Length: 312
Ligand SMILES: C[S@@+](CC[C@H](N)C(=O)[O-])C[C@H]1O[C@@H](n2cnc3c(N)ncnc32)[C@H](O)[C@@H]1O
Image (cartoon, rainbow, N blue to C red):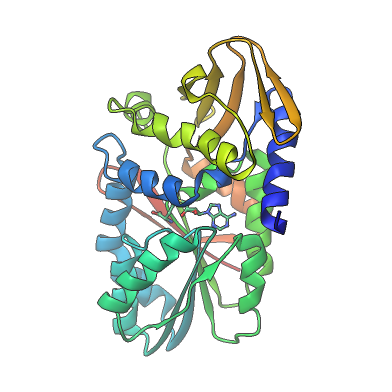
């Protein structure tokens, strides 16, 4: 068993021994999970990519002018397939003669798709993808001296609960020098009836995405989860802004992962994902706790989503 599988197993077993049981959402993205996530991005209920794309289409020019550099490294964490970012990279390449784009993602498969797209659409940009956990791969770019724009788009920050979101921003701040920028994509609080179906669609794609985590555990960690004995459940709380996904055990059951035994009561849940929604006040609080300063704020025409530009 290699190091990353060992860590995966350790985190899965620790999570399933917690009360309530938890599994980290970062493990959704094996190759099949990344593929299902592409289906989610195409769902009519999943309003996030269209809103974020509108921001990119409308405001990339203004962001390029605000950044105003002749050299820049764009470093994108959890970059995915790059289909939204390609326009942003294109616009920046028209303003910045010496531009590099470094997408970081845990899934090497999705990085190949990203590379194909960027090389085809923006051949002038210096491209290099880094596969692995961004907490580990980001330091590999430390020897570079160009000004940086770190990007964390797609509302990925929403996957961090409370203090962990602050810790994440502190981690980013540590990677920034004076004059560097950071763009954070955040999903905004809005009518709860718009939010919930994005995590519980009519076709059951989000259900397949959630259950794929158990398939992955079965395959990579010698688990024996019976998929039909688990169901998908999603909630959204309009006051806290937390959209959460769970797997429900439909019966009392025993599951083995390698030689380890995990017991489930009937109706016991595993918490698998949080997608925190923000508003300006919550973001100001987050920035203040992390010690970074909010420079500019860009939204789509319906105010569904925001790109927030921070400096240090
Ligand atoms: C929700 S998708 C967003 C993709 C893209 N940024 C977008 O907005 O469309 C999250 C991406 O982050 C990656 N990811 C999640 N946790 C990660 C980690 N700890 N290190 C590196 N990549 C990670 C996943 O593989 C996935 O491609």
